[in-house]
Every structure is written in C-alpha cells, then in structure tokens.
Figure 1 (tube, one colour):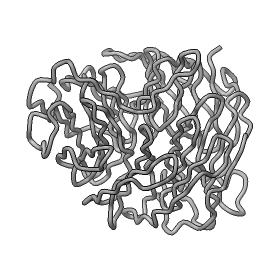
Figure 2 (cartoon, rainbow, N blue to C red):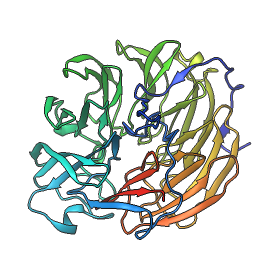
Figure 3 (cartoon, rainbow, N blue to C red):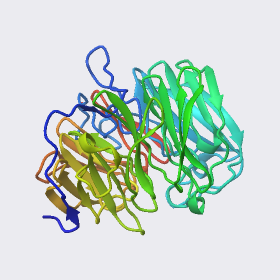
Length: 442
C-alpha cells in the first residue's frame, strides 16, 4: 500500500450513475467537442478524439498564430470556432506584451478581450474587448495572468469571466447578450485570479472565493438573471467547480481550504461537506465511477479525498463516504486526469507522475519521473488510449494510458505552455505564452 494512502472502507458498489458535466456533446459525425475547461466530461478526456503522437515545429503543425496579450486559459472549441480569453497591455507590443515565463505581468491599463478563431486556418473571426482598465491588484510573478480562466460555450453562447473585470455572454457572432459585475476580488498575497464558470442546462455557476466575503452564485445563462447566491466561509481559491449528476439530482462540488462542499444546482443549498484541502485550492475536482476526487498541494501540505457520492449527505468527515485519502505527492497547480478508472496525478508542479485506481486508491505506479519535464502547470489530458503531459518549456510527453508506465513519444515546440491542451477530432490545440498551435495527425 502507498505510504500516505488511507482507505477506510471498500469501494462503492455498482449501480451509481454519474455524469460529470451537462456539456457532453457530439458533432454530426459523432466526435466530441471541447466546450469547457477540462473538456467534454470535465475530467481531461476526449472520448472520440485521435490526436497525433508526434510533432515538432516542422511536423504535423497545421498552423500557429500569435495571440495578442497574455492569458493561460485553455482553448475552448465548438464546431469551427476556437474561443480564447486574453489581457492585452495598452501600448506594449511584440514579445514584451506576452510576458514570457518568469516575467511578472505589469499592471497598467489592459484590454480584457474575447477572441473567436477559425479552427481551419487560425484567422481571427472576431475580437471583442469586454472591458479596458487597470487591474486593481498585482498577479503572481511566475504564472498568473489577468486572463487565467477559460471561456465556456454551449454552441450558441460564449461566456467569458474576467473575475474582477466582470462576466460576459456573447452569441456565436460576437454580439454582447448580457454582462454583470460582481465587484473586486481580493486574492491572497495578490496572486491573481484563475477560476472558470461551469454550465449545466440553463445554469451558469461560478465560485467567488477571496479574502473578503466569499460565495457561490448561479445565473440563468440566457438572460444573466441571478438565480441564487450562497455564502461561503472560505478564503482564496482558484479551483473551478464540478457539476455532477447523482440519483437524478445535479450537484456542484467545490474545493476549499476550510471545507469541501457540494451544493444543489437548483437551490444552492448545501448537500454535503468535508474537511478542506490545503491553503491553495487550485486543481479542479474530477468525477467518475460514482466517485468525486478533490485534491491540492503546495507548501502548506498535500491532500486528496476520494468521495463516494452514494453515501454523501451532511457532514461526511470521517465517515464511510470518504473512500480513500492521500496526504503526499499531490498536485499544486495541475488538475488530475481521470481516464477510465485511472487517476493521474502530477506531484506539485513537477514532472513526477503517479497513477491510482480511482475506486480503492491502489497505486498502479508512483512517483515516475518524466524525462525532459521539469516543471508543469498545464493539466494532463487523455484520448484513444494515450495521456499527454505538457511542460512549461514546450515539451509534451505522450504516454500509454493504463496501469503500466510507457512513453510513446517526446515532442518539443518553440514556446512555453501553462494552458492545458484541448483535443478535438484528429487535432491537439496548444496555447503557448505567445502562439496558439493546431497540431493534426498526418
């Protein structure tokens, strides 16, 4: 048994139906799209995608285009459109506008912009400036931007959340449908923003955790009407919520330093809660096999809880609803990948990977060093029996998905990457510090 792993009981039995997103969609030919942060199932997996195994600057790159400004949100894709968020500094051009890795973003006036890019050739279909102003706080010097969240789309609307700069809804052609301003967020140590809204049916949900009054709120995606708001006793978090369906009821699972909590989607009422993670809740929860996994790491410690939804009601701390826990080697920034019952975790922000059985916590392998990956903020993704792990310096390792560790390929591009990849059809999209790449299988 893994050191640091606790399994208080046997894994839950069969018969639990769980859907980890209300946005699982298909195109006319049956391929998934990538409509939100962490993909169609919100777990990093694209079921029907078949992206390439090998690429370089001179091989399998269909196109690459320079993206103005700076942002680390992942590409979001629907049909022939790619949607990106970016913060463009006023009066700064060229390489300086991108503030490469390790360069602290300068305050100044920024344009907070939404881009719609043609998936076929990389051309800009439309670009809208949601707001133009100076951020009220600084951002972390290593990896934060003022456009760290991803857009989310249902195919008809595109939702852009710039946190302290507001929430905006556009139609497919870039027309502003509605907007709302929730005020200013005051983040711990001025480390910057980083969460993304989630969609389920007509509900658009976002988390507002900071050093003042925190809350979770739901809007009607069609009109922007606030449907409910629930206060949270929480400090700053960066984790995106996860919406799951269990026994006919949709619930919103949230990470937090003080408590893990799940709320009823329709009312905002608390369903269950448990002990919190660390003081830096950044990774997003994932769900599958009737389980939800919430994790975080960093200087304040390491924490993972795997929760059985079947037994989750009220305060579940120390109960059988907690299937297993882990108190070491968990991610700091990257979210886990949950792929067909295997949970992949990067240690901290490093290229050290572990793979666990989701139901009981049994390790398939642990602390496997990934050659040529020293630092990773991007979250791993998976498709067609492969796992893709991208480093900050431009290297992506392609691994065989399964209980045995095997490297299939090493690929390097001339850019740095903090954003997580998006997988669609035979393509992988990588958003770098400066360029957006479309990489397509031959």
